[in-house]
Length: 130
Image (cartoon, rainbow, N blue to C red):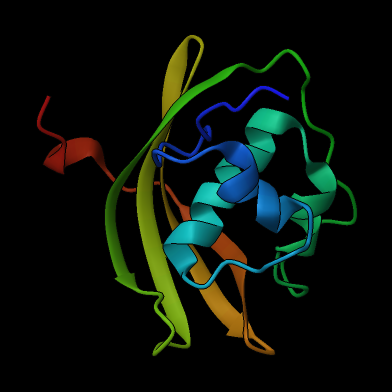
């Protein structure tokens, strides 16, 4: 088996990082780690994981991922809350893909002790130093 660095950007092998969340052997302990695992799920085409970690009040009935989409990197720009001591949290990130990037501020809540994605918005790039 090949050990590759996890697509989420942390310096760990996939199986020891987001792969354990995808396999259901653990749940993400923070909103940021859930965000990273969801990005990795997009990279790996894990639609089932994305739906399982989406809040039931905002979750779509189905999710069709484009197999031609090539995600190329994740940059976490900021977080608020989202730790074991919080009920809510936000993660602002830039997800790059072949041909562009997506900037989003995602909102997360804890439901029955587990972090779930609620929704997101697209903040202005005014604060982007680039």
